[in-house]
Length: 95
Image (cartoon, rainbow, N blue to C red; front, side, top):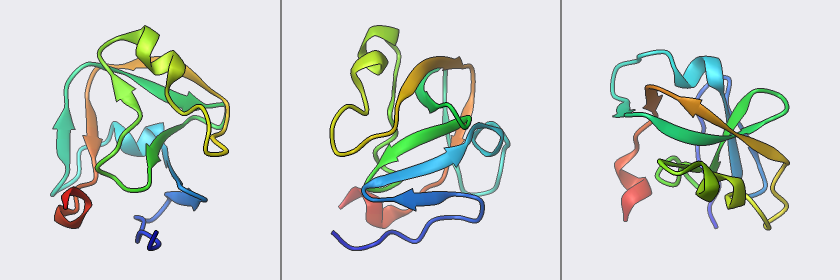
């Protein structure tokens, strides 16, 4: 798996990209807007993406998010409801 170029303030650890919640909820040009979702959030207040920004660890169902991020050396997370999120977008994440 090629290393993904992550945005400033984001971290990649293994197959996981960690994005601070404060960055996720801040509108920025070129980002995709996600409506109300439950997100897998680490104890350091970061949401998770798996391999690239096209695979956010979120869902409309809290029970699904409780199971997300298990395996692949994922950090421990808890579900958090986020009303609006602005996710980085790279066309290359989708092919």
